[in-house]
Image 1 (spheres, one colour):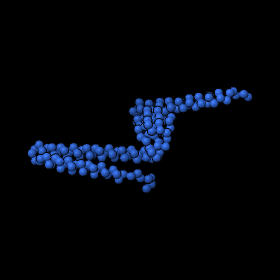
Image 2: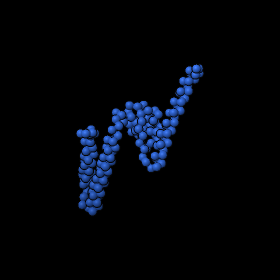
Image 3: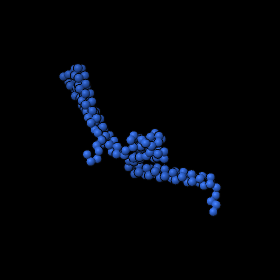
Image 4: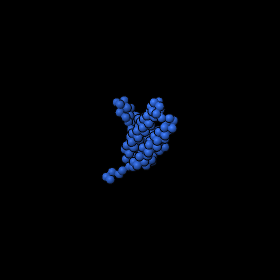
Length: 157
């Protein structure tokens, strides 16, 4: 049987491959849009050029460090060592950082409010404001340094 020109056959395979790639990309995009419309947050993880549009469309795009450069440009987060267990560590660490930042803001504002109130009532002078500001800065720095002790723990240990 004569199946036709070999170059025509290769061209048709390339066209079919491109069609399926585009179809998969549109399925990813439709899935992400449906999830976002229903109020869900979408995290898309990918490492190839084909994943770049979906990474950009998701609420959080996560690129693997061993992949190509385009997903790293369009994503929000890059995992350098391509270990998916780092996702949970990053989320937990982000929550701890958010809590420490809130604590530090409250502590700083509280110290300033106390000194301002004492100054308005005539109990302190400028030296107390400077001393309390320096003290609050040292406490806030120490509070932030507790995040340095957070290390990734292996499962089962």
